[in-house]
Image (spheres, rainbow, N blue to C red):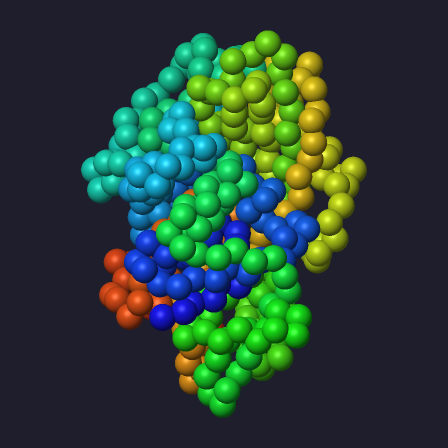
Length: 379
């Protein structure tokens, strides 16, 4: 069996790795598109603090967080340990004592169903600052010990190396889909035709362009995210927890004294790959509002990525009715680094004709759904 995976971000890389481990002949094709979401992403893995009103989404999201334990162990067996992943804990912060109490109670109740989230501990402002010293001195917190952070570039590179170790091939180029009646027969790269038993399209925000010649209108738009990286001199930042303040932004820490402040959510920017004054101001002002101790940090870079955001907020995972030989993986939005590895595994199971562990029916790529879920923590 030969499978071509078009798009080698974290979702495509995961699908390629899982398929290669199962003995499938895999060709992953990627055009290294500027602004790919995975390449820009530095992500939080703490789905348990999110809105749970859309139950199918929440179940997939939390299962994705749980899967990281299996993923990290399996990649280590393949010799891959440089993922930028650390279970450093996630700290919800607020200056409102009532909010903190509500979060603590809610998360303790959820922990009974999802023990993998770890311990839930209510912290004073002083204790919160002891864990993340730049924090404002009036912000108390709720620490979720199972929360983690991950580097999208390093995780994806590790998945692709592991896939190649199992025999997969990685090729750079622009792919188009080949049709044979009501079936996808493979792809073209330049003038070369490559036959395949199945094509998995995981091309992110660019997938609608790839599928449009087939008459498929994929309900995905690019959402620009600007993410600021800075460095605090002489600070051992690696063990610091992820910070989840009120609103959409976050702070997280890596080794090398690096702090990441993210991220903007810009729905009307299209594929405009620029760092903007408004975006920089939003990130800097919010970061300093939460952590004034970052004022003396050195700005290193701002990364820009285009998240593939679906119309209703749910991922797009599965086949297209009436068109054989094609699977779609898309629409992970701001949760791509959390959901990508598990979603890739589930696509691999579909490709192999196996039953998936998650119910993917609510995530049919061309579904008509009234759901208006937003991938946002309850903050």
